[in-house]
Image 1 (cartoon, rainbow, N blue to C red):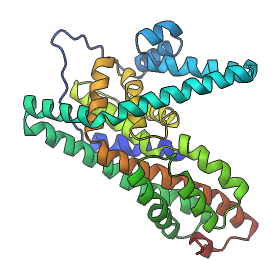
Image 2: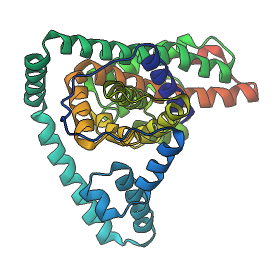
Image 3: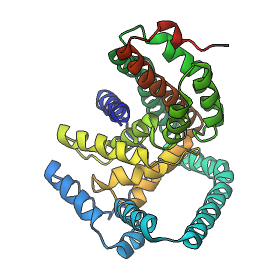
Image 4: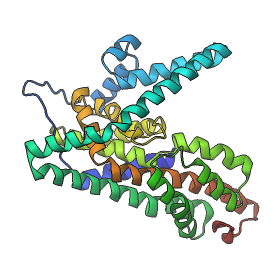
Length: 333
C-alpha cells in the first residue's frame, strides 16, 4: 500500500510539472461544479460513500457502488450459504465473460475514437495523447528504477538494482506482453522459487499482489484524473492532490488484473473533482486510445513489483536474523 501510494505521488508530481490537456466534448450548457477546496472535496466524497445504493447504481456513483459492494460482501461472507456463494460465483464468471467479449471489440471502438479526435481537432489531439503517454511512461520508469529501489535499500541495506533488474527482466517483460497481472502469476511464482523464497509466503503474496499491488494503476488513475481537471480548468491545490493520491491508491487496490482494468476506475477519481460521468467516460476512452503501450508498461510495473516486494519482505527478515546473503538477490538457475 505504501508503494502504491508513493507511486500515485510520483504520477501527481509529474502531472503538475507537465500538465496535459485532453480533447473532450463538453456540451455548451454543461454545468461544471468544481470544488472550492479540500473541504468541499471531502464533503463530496463522504456524500458519495453514504449515497443510497439504488441511487448510486442509477446515477453511476462509482464510489457509492464500491462502498456498498464492500458492505454487502462482508455481510455475505458471514451469512451466505454454499448455494448463494455458488450462484454469485456463476454470476461473476458470466459478467467476466461478457466483459471479455466487449474487450474483443475494443479495437473498433478505439479506431472510432481516434478518427473522431483527428477529424475534429486535427493532429493536435494526437500530440496531446503523445504527451499524456510520455507523462505516464515517465512516471512508471521513475517508480520502477528510483522509488522501488529506494524502498528495497531501506529494507535490505544493499545495492537494490540486481534484484530490481531481475524482477523487471524476468517478470516485467512477460507482463508487458500479456498485459494481465493475473496471467503473469505462474511466472512470478516460478521466479520466487528460483530466488529461494519461502513457499508459505510467496504462494499467498503473489496471487494477492496480482489484485491489490497496483502501483501502475494508481499512476494511471491520478494522471488521467488531473488531465481531465486541467482540461476543464479546475484548479487542484496540494491538499486535494494528496486526497487524489489516497483515492487512487484505494481505487488501484480494487482494479481487476485484466487488460485495461484500471481505466474503469478513473470516474471514481474524477467524481471527487465534481466531473460528471459523461466527461469522465470520455477520459476513459482516451485511456483506451493509448492503452496499447500504457497498459503494457503499467502491468509490467505492477507484476514485477509483486515479486520485488515479496523478496524484500523476506530478505529484510533474513537481514534482521543475520542470515541474509546479497547473492540471494540473484535467482538460482
